[in-house]
Image 1: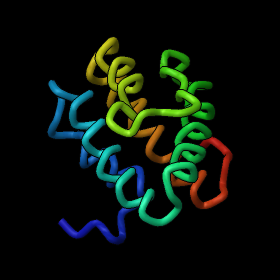
Image 2: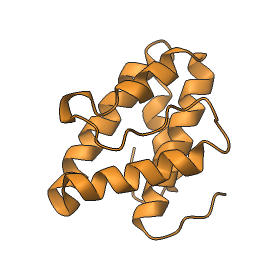
Image 3: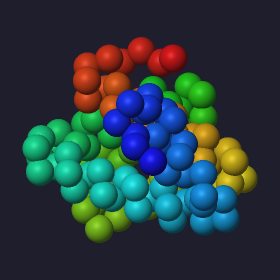
Length: 115
C-alpha cells in the first residue's frame, strides 16, 4: 500500500488497525521509533517539549492521559503513557494514541490547534 498520498490520520490509523489486543505495546513501540528519529534532529529537550505539549493538548479530549514528566528518564520515557493506555479499552487507547500522534506532528509543524 502506497501511503505517501494518504492523510496522516489515515496512515496512523492503518498502523494501529491490525493491533487490537496489544494496543499499549504497539503504541509505545511507535512512539519509541519516532522519538529516536526526532531526537536525532532536535535533541532530548526538544522532543520532550514537543511531547509534553502534545500530551497537554490531547488531554482536553482524553483527560485520562498521564501528564508528561518534566524530566523523563530515557529508558522509561513512555511509562506513564503505556499505563494510561493499559487502563483503557483497546479502542479508546487506539483512538487516543492516534490523536496524540497527529497532535505531535501538528505541534512539530507549529500548528497547535486541535481538529
